[in-house]
Figure 1 (tube, rainbow, N blue to C red):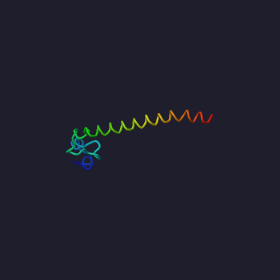
Figure 2 (tube, rainbow, N blue to C red; figure 1 turned 45 degrees about the vertical axis):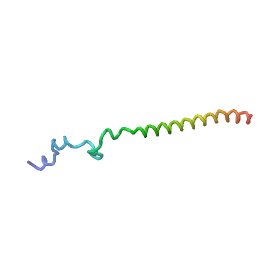
Figure 3 (cartoon, rainbow, N blue to C red; figure 1 turned 120 degrees about the horizontal axis):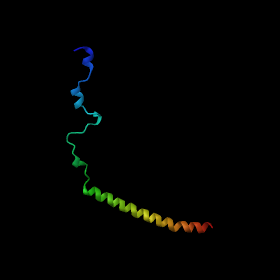
Figure 4 (cartoon, one colour; figure 1 turned 180 degrees about the vertical axis):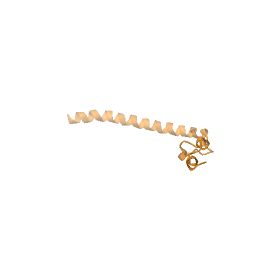
Length: 74
């Protein structure tokens, strides 16, 4: 074996390396860990409901105040 052929990577080593091994997956990671709990869904729906109510109230206030300001300026 000469010096140049010893510098080439072996095919077997390259086949078992990850393409991007900077962020390798831990061995104890499971796909089931990615599924959200029911408590998370309840929290998201509660926040969405509160945000929806706040938006409806804000739109009602704007629809009431816009004509009042318009007629006050005319």
